[in-house]
Amino acid sequence: MKALILIDIQNDFIPGGALAVPGGETIIPLVNQLQGQFDLVVATQDWHPAHHKSFASQHPGKNVFETVDLHGMDQVLWPDHCVQGTEGADFSPLLEMNRVEAIFRKGTDPEIDSYSGFFDNGYRKSTAMGVYLRGKGVKEVYLVGLAADYCVYFTALDALKEGFATHFIEEATRPISPEGFEKAKADLASKGGNILPVNTLL
Image (cartoon, rainbow, N blue to C red):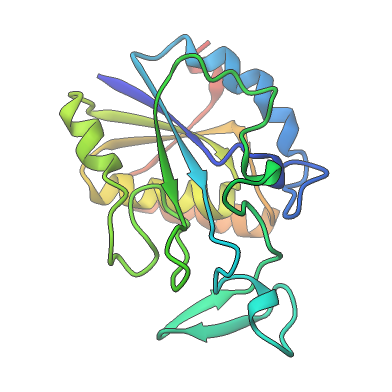
């Protein structure tokens, strides 16, 4: 069974949002079109408390995009984004949600960030998405969403670790950094991930 995972297609990650991914809104029509090709569609949602330690605002004297040590791990400091209950944390109103069976929220622990849809960055806690997918009989996952070089990439890495055949639909994602995206794609391919052109699905 195949599952499509929609990763963080939220207002704060599209132009006009607090942490906008360049061109992020352009993937939504394609993502909507892809949903009908899959047995199962699930989504992840960045869902931070207002005082999340990944926010630069929580570190006096530090600036956005600086890196700090947070509990022994490197942490990029982000603008406040996807705060629980805010419009920025909502899914884009252009994203079709009728086929989405489950939503997995991440980044809810104020002390640790969570790029992957499966685990936090320190592998302390699971979102239970892997258990859910296995319970549905899923063998293959296809990833779309934002941002390609962060949350989509780290979700793909964990999907591989969890034993799923993992496909990254390049045209249905956008990166923060094109250079970072090239490195991410090379790393995924070296670990057995499949960078898939969308025309093989539509």
